[in-house]
Image 1 (tube, helix red, strand yellow):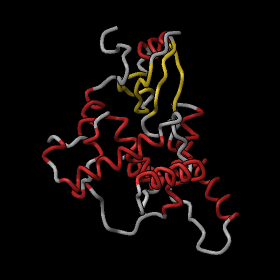
Image 2 (cartoon, helix red, strand yellow):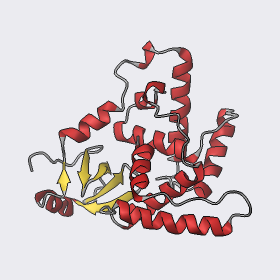
Image 3 (tube, rainbow, N blue to C red):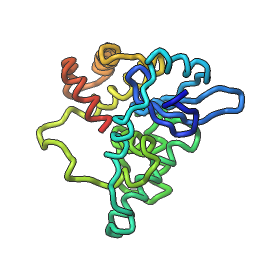
Image 4 (tube, helix red, strand yellow):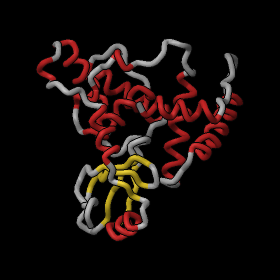
Length: 227
């Protein structure tokens, strides 16, 4: 079918969710990866062709442009040694969390893995879960280590940010929502996030309780996490 062929790393949108073909087992199944969450989903060639015919799958110029926009245009050899070392460090974390299959982006599951990788690298300041999630999304969307080049020119405002714990809960909520359905909406993610915020506040001892953000802020945070 013109515009949609089965090959590894093909990027497209399934019901509006950025996705790619992760692998093609010989039994006719197709393993998809949802790029916003890193979650994996098993489908079939027939099912995907049906979804393509129904307009649920879009292989668009926008998707490829988005992936290319994440990649620095010059070769790594043109960069300073310190930047190349930082790229290698980031790749090591992305590869490390994927060694045992698709990573689960929750603090409880990922932090011990990050600590093991940091110990192996001799890294005194390992990255947080949200940071590694961003690296993972960029790298898997492009399969190019240049997507992990530090770009301070693209950093957002220096205005106060949402607490890291809230971003961690947002990633968990998004991952759970997309595991249930690739058609999950921001409303679905927001409902899951609200439940997680309430539960986290109930379990917290002392400190400032987390405040549930507005739906508009959830949209903005999703854009931030996926950037």
